[in-house]
Image 1 (cartoon, rainbow, N blue to C red):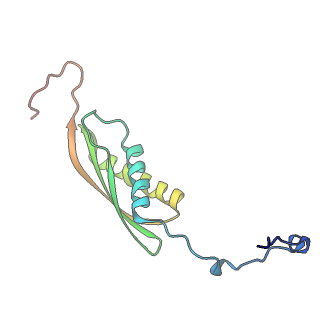
Image 2 (image 1 turned 30 degrees about the horizontal axis):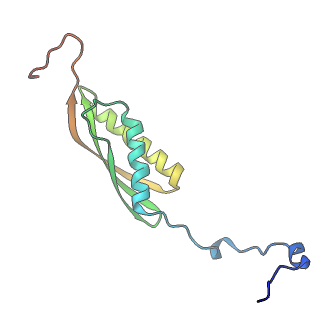
Image 3 (image 1 turned 90 degrees about the vertical axis):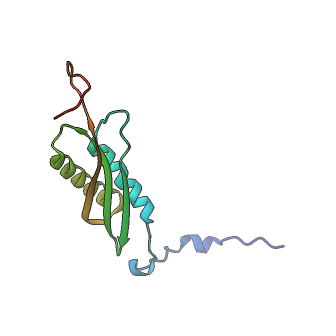
Length: 127
């Protein structure tokens, strides 16, 4: 068995430059993008009651464009529309920065509202 090693002349040669179009491609799985979107939604929603579920996301990627659906639970009372806009903006920003994909659409689906009682308010029915 003969060992093959690079000769000194090979080390002196400049590396071959391959044009960007011929280097290959990186494909990021939909489930990876969904994890990034879920984490971004968690960051945007903030602190929730202990019995609230964590935000989750489903994603469909087509030609470097991600269509995202996020499922969240929110505390109530709150401005639901403003919170959903905040989640949308944050998901678009984080997926764009971390994954490098365009996100033209983020559907935020509020699954449940958790009633938050303030000091002096009893647990009971809210009208």
